[in-house]
Length: 443
Image: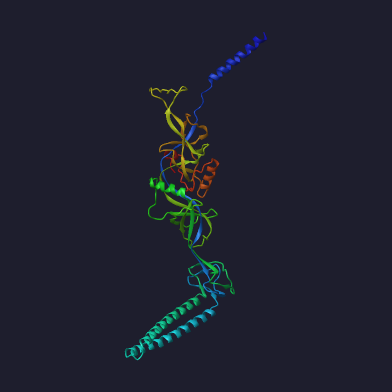
């Protein structure tokens, strides 16, 4: 009796649950926001670390021995080429010059005597008044006297040069640094005593290093026509200082070294910057952004739509038209008798080449016209049927606001065991209004 009553109670409940299960609505198709990408031209910019170097560096060293009598410049001042910086005691060199002049005068007097003797013997030897041997000796003595005069002149010139070295002058125009000697110090030419350093700081060299692999990729892209150079003019270089500020003056690329450093696998790239206000000092650590060319077949994908798989590869989800199939894999026919087309999600592995503003620069893995999911990525899986709407992207950041740069991109890549954009900097992006973005996919 008790079991029948229990059965009568449970039976309606089971029927009610079955009805509710049958009446449950089908799962809703997830809605995703997409943009349609089109190729666009973006600058290829390499951001490289480096240091500043003076345009000219001249070490002022002692060229004669002696005691420094006085210093004739202010440390840190701008000096002209040929301006006297130090005075070394000239007394010993004045005496040496006088001695050389006296020796020259003696040699010249002896030469006059030998010239007269040779002329006299020349007449006498013709009349056999003197022997041929005596005449030959007179000619030899005349030649010796000529050589003595030449040696005397050279000694005088050398003594004058040494005396001139007692005036230590600036070899180039520039800024003189700290004096390494003081009045009363003894300097030596043998050890080339360093006295001061003069550096020309306007213009200023910036030497940066680039990996040989990046240089190889750049040359390959140019050969394949993916990158276009800017013509015969030197590439423009932008400098970022240690405090993050952008240096006001633009630099020009000078040359790229042809030798690869075997220890680091890098090559040196040199740029030249104006430095009239002395904002750059030798030895400063800087980063240089070098415009190497134009990539005319790149795609810009918002960072919201780019993910990374377990291998660290960058991926995007795209929406493709595909046949709608049932659970058995058979196509579902529409009213016209043809296979019904639906929007399905597909996974693409892409290759990035750095960042521009809030977008990743994609150079491989997608093609023109692809619909890339940038909103609702977490709701879509490869093979799912989705409902497509135009993505509503956030407005571009105000001028001066920090944007995704290479440091941010490098940290994001490190988190996913990938380095998405080595040595490529972020140029400021110009994002269109949200309603314009799906139509072109351009910035």
